[in-house]
Amino acid sequence: MNTYHSPIKTNPIKTREDFCILLKQICDPIKPFYSKGLARLKLGNTSAAYSDSIAEMEGFSRILWGLVPYLVNTSENYDLWEVHLQGIRNGTNPNHEEYWGDINEYDQRIVEMAAFGLALLLIPEKVWDPLSVEEKNNFANWLRQINKYKVWDCNWLFFPVLVNLGLKNVGQHFEKEVIETNLNRIDDFYISNGWYSDGEGGHSDYYIPFAIHYFSLIYARLMEHEDSSRAQVYKERAEAFAKDFIYWSSADGSSIPYGRSMTYRFAQSAFWSAAIYAGIEPFPLGVMKGLLLRNIRWWMKQPIFNDSGILTIGYTYPNLIVGENYNSPGSPYWSLKSFLPLALPEEHPFWGVEEESYPTLKAKSVQKEPHFIIYHDEKNEHIMAFNSGHRSTNDHTHTSAKYEKFVYSNTFGFSVPRAEWGLAQGAFDSTLALSEGDNIYRVKRCSEEFVIEDNYIYTRWKPWHDVEIMTWIIPGVPWHVRIHSIHSNRELDCAEGGFALGLEGKNSNVSLDFTESEKGCIAYMPWGASGIKCLQADGKTELIYPNANTNLLHSRTIIPTAKTKILTGSNWLVSAVYGEALNNTTVSEWNETPEVNIMPDRLVIRLPYSDKIEINRR
Image (tube, rainbow, N blue to C red; front, side):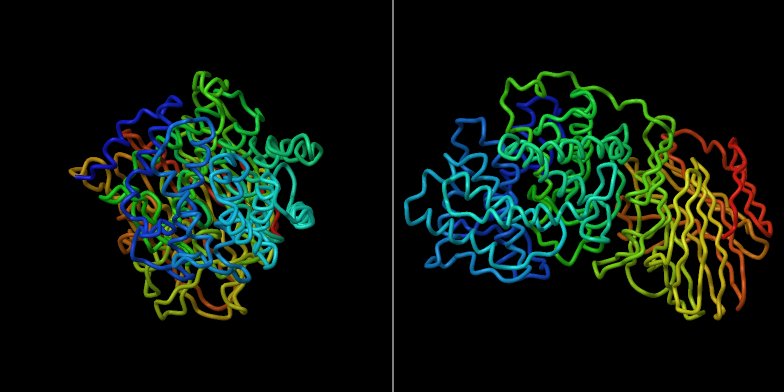
């Protein structure tokens, strides 16, 4: 029996008291896993890119993102804090066997130092005042290392800012120039409408809400008098961003899985925590309360804890395949950033306001900064983010799957490859996979160019130097259309993947239903339906059963796939893709097939029950 997870499932997570109890329910299970000197936290036996000793320091640090806000407004002597205070003494003592060590360029410990900066800012009387003079010197000297070494040119720039502000708050020497230089550099990443990229030319993913905006809003709250102009800019940008970001969440509390670091899970709602803490109201306070609490409640229903009550690496279930090279067993506790509202006093209006339901929004939101056209279904339960992809790429794990799929969905999730051989190991949902007949497939990794218009997305990409593909995506719910003009000097096998439908659910007695023909196939379970129709003459469709544990949401899936062969020269590949969250109803529009007419100068598309769309060919 999972003795720690069970009480979490019964926590209603509605009041401030519930929120405090939840934090303890998450943190109490970690108590047996601290080291002898209490400066390290070993929560598993897997490794990350950095040493295991640094990973254990990371685990120790990440608990502070929830523990520090909790301690702001309580006089309770929570025993976990005594553990951490002693761990800080020993971890920053160069003569102790558990000393956290001298750092280097781009060191993971730079990330983890930010939590100590937050502690010095919010609870100096609890983290700084109890230390002896020698212990204070050790702590400050260890933190000041951050000013000597390079950080990655992205959201990492905020970590030295928080550390220096923390040192300043307790009267220690700090580097004002580092704060100014880093904040000015972060401004270079600003795009428009509240959006940043995570580094120059980087992605606009969850690192914008749960890192750049999160830290910006903490700065705006704590520095609003000393640096009022910058604080005001940060608040205005966050308010603009919120108008788009709300579309990333659904009425049931789930959000779009997209990008890297999905193992941080309920950090998805950390932006709303920071917005509430900073006192901005892009939406009524009750609406933001609902967005935050529904997301956390949704996550607490998922099997994300192991039998000891420890958060695991993965998304909705433990899964190392989808993790990053920098994910250690303690990494998932960055999700505790969503507990920032605990730093607000009990009498704050947030705790008393009535939680409001998900607001009425437009069915479609064109968001050019993150490269999305987002559709919601009528109940605001199914979200589909149609994606142009990006001009740049990186070497993070499964970058193609995490950033270059044609569409991302909170109902179907997305899949990553298990291995390199064939369609089952590749798990090619929501993408076009191509092979030279050797069963080794390539997918889109970046775009040569892209255009996002109100009713379609165009992207041009090259899986090989002598293969050019022009793709048009025509978004819709539940149907969307993908049109590919392929100019190739190679004969290729092509596989166009639809959505990955989960085969496992709450009722293990439910079996898969499907309809399969040469030109179209659909699979459906009570919770969703996924289908694809091949609209070009020589293609056929097939239901592919990917390897287990390739999808973020579902441990076993099926992917309707359109397959064809293309010859050297110019080819057209056209597919109509169906995805619907059923909620135990029947498939509504499968028999209503989209129409596509490829003309010399334009493309003409008609989705069921929609107006005709005409696109000038490029």
